[in-house]
Length: 635
Image 1: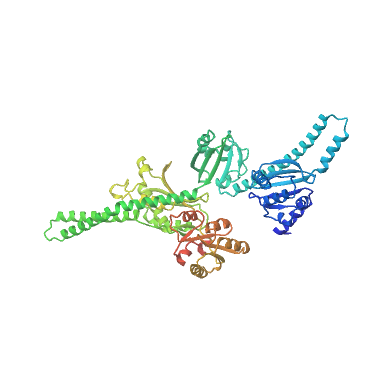
Image 2 (image 1 turned 90 degrees about the vertical axis):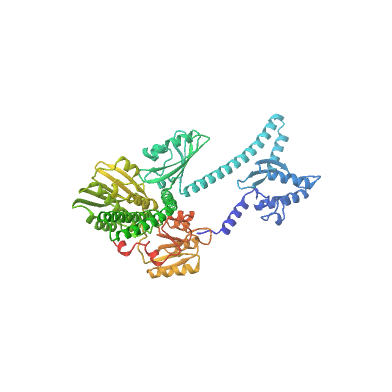
């Protein structure tokens, strides 16, 4: 049975009225929050003074005026003194005799959120028994009687202290529970280790930050929880923190290929606090942004030079062409003219290549079948290989569409295969392996059985204009592959294996949204934009339900389990954003985000870590390419 708030209040009030003692709770402004019926009855108070909100000083004034505290010369000064004592919010226990001759005990305890709770107990009968004991116990010495009275008073104080301690314990337990709940909700691993390196606290998030690690680690040594490789990376910083020096570091976990940021804070009582976060997506975005800035800087530096050089080449081509048309030109001079023209045209080609490196070439990821990329690549590469050279293609990636710029990744892989061909000569073999690494990267490795990279090539192979092919190479092929990789937030590595050279190209793994024509949830607070996008979705075969806020969309998700796709703006009405909605739907419904924010905005970058992002304005074709085509989804 569901109990409403009003029913709960009524039941609480009924329970308080059943106890024999009077009880009050005042807030930090000394206004009444709640009291029970015995309070009104004990002090014979009017209704206005037992109504929530009644001021404490009005109650004291009423009681003092009626003689509750005996004769008082200056009532207002007395009220001010009692109010000042109450505002101190100190635990206290006292006994006093009321104006009518009855005795009461007053026990007060402050509340952690401000204010205090007071319990009033009528101890008239207890006092009477003490007096009777004194009157009828002539055999007892005055010292024994005084000791008995002192014990009785001490017992009452101890009872009050125990009550206060129990309340404090309850509050601490509730506070600890709230703290643990809060840390459990954090998308990070929060922990504490003692001076020996053993966990004394953990929010059980280690396995979500570093996949494959244990979840329950209390009592474990941090070396056993992290594994030897990760522990060796963080051990120096941890030792510094235990010694009293805070530290922040980043490292890559080899087993999971995740990038981790760890902050160590010294504990003055011994040990250290640890905050660990998975920043893989942040690192990928940061690398892409850094490469974009490098390209912009390079473009600014060489654009003027390229323009002037292009003009010079135009002049050289024109003059040499005119010279070649002269009727009395010597035969050997014609060869020089043709050579000059060929060199100038090659300079023009080089300028075009420079423009490709430095110019703005936006990545356009679409839902792509990785297996089809390999098939197309084989079709392009095999005719360019010598007859005695073999190309082996190994596909270890799952059969799932991935968001890739198919044209640029094909160009990059073809470039690597042709470089391997040139290194091997007339015969040999080249192997291209495609795989997914821990659902973090999609990786391509191109290996050959040639002589391998020279030490200089390993160090400078990705630098623009560096080439080992002499006049036959421009030195821009590998640098353009590197540029594409970094622009996409990926990584490119050159190395020598046992049998030859190897190049490893990694891009962030982004699974495409599954193809669907079911129910789509469109979340957009602009009426006109919502109408346009609704038409796009309906033209793609979706049924559409709409919302204008993340909270409204969350309610629809709870009520409609058939929703198969969410398309949400990032900025929405209300406090929650499209990012909050993506977090709530994570693992349940595929999410696609859209925004008019610039690509360097913090919300845009955070959104890219959660889901594919469409930049406004966009058309139906832009939306369609981010969703797995039916032909791919059916494979």
